[in-house]
Length: 385
Ligand SMILES: Cc1ncc(COP(=O)(O)O)c(C=O)c1O
Image (cartoon, rainbow, N blue to C red; front, top):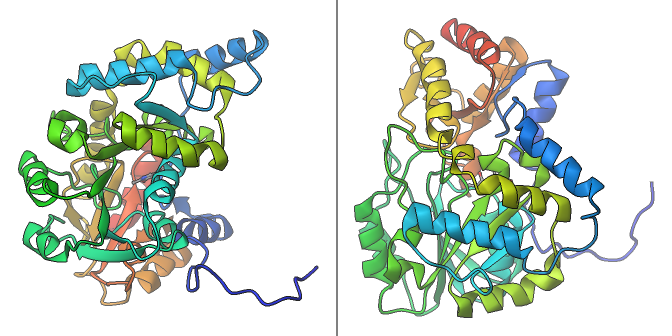
């Protein structure tokens, strides 16, 4: 072991190893069924994999342009036009990123300055707050209201000050599976319309939405789109979370600032995958049925939990199912989640981990992006608890 002998002043005091790594580590140690981390356990399309191989063999192996290859940018913009009726410019209003996480981090770095305030809704995806704090910003937490995790817009209106630089929204929402409605979009517009606030809209689960509900993208609301950076992830859409490739869409003047940070953050993104994705995205059949695919998995899992003592909290999008265990135990979420692994062999994530103050509502998050055998096995165990 070697050691730095100087003084380290942490820029992120209090940040520990991510809850996903902790729970996955415990799952491996106790040979538990891992429904904690959000990744699919089924294969990526053969067609896509063989297209990547072909692109590599054809020699697409050197740096891509900083903004992404033109063919992929054109396809992303075409998809936004077909899906949300908005016409972004492929040259100046879209950038290919190393996954949603890098898009989020770079967007925050590009706009948040010392002392700027950023409104984040809790429970929140874990990368938002550290990214704001590393850039000197101040996080203001608004609470999603139980039982359905809706936004209290009056609370948000009261939180806006002349220091508010950004509001981060996420729909469909990780960890709760809730979604924003048309009315939410109207409220967001009302609050931001006479301000310089930038909306960072995390829509990585845009195609994983159920019961034919229409995903409410900021892209579909011209006045919101004007002030928004919209983040997408091919990892989520094509069952390939390990590829870390995504994109950000936004108006030219926001995108040019985004790119100033992006070029020194990663510069450019995996070339052969970009070429293969450009071909693959051209056929909307490759992503349009994703909602139905995951809805079937959600229903398979929840049908088998009908007689369990866990209470099912409705999920409308993403591949996460929340279960309330208050009828079973009054242990803290972290303790109960650990016991689920060690005694029963199932790994989940306590929702308290998505709150700064570890708010404890006796609710755990389970990922259902798994094969039926795994879901069946997990549900059988959960029904016995
Ligand atoms: C809400 C949310 N945003 C962003 C990301 C990151 O996306 P990517 O894996 O493309 O970096 C995730 C991944 O779990 C997520 O759940």
